[in-house]
Image (cartoon, rainbow, N blue to C red; front, side, top):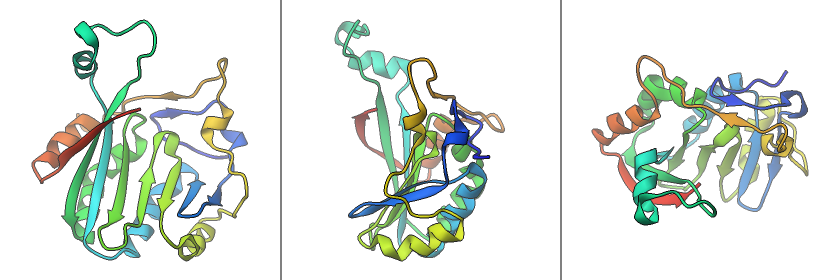
Length: 203
């Protein structure tokens, strides 16, 4: 059965198939959770250096309040925000070192999102909420064999985790902690390595 991360609850995982859908400049796919780390490593192996690492984390409650008029959440129309952060100019081995240290936490975490990409080609593998993955690339066909090697056939209509949610059966995400660290601690650690905040976006 389709498995997902410990920080994620999908009400009907049996409805989700390991498949990929092709768009003009990206592939979107679902794979069972136990395959995601290996797929990411295979993606990294194919890339041209230098690479960069992207981490996207929700603002804290206090940070959200600071964005609200008068420091009070409005009764209607409030949208949460996320911090988008980059660590540029990395070698493959530097990216692998980050993933050896923090990859298990980030893959399991339900609140954060992260990506690895190439400065040379701009190919990017972005692991999003509910572990839906976007693989951005100018030539999607060069990754068809990667998808097929993990048992994911092509489809014209990918059923995502989001498609299984309803008011009665919503999806849920949770912040995961491992070895007394969470995604905010990962961000703080990577800032010391040169990670910087690029922008704040609406969730």
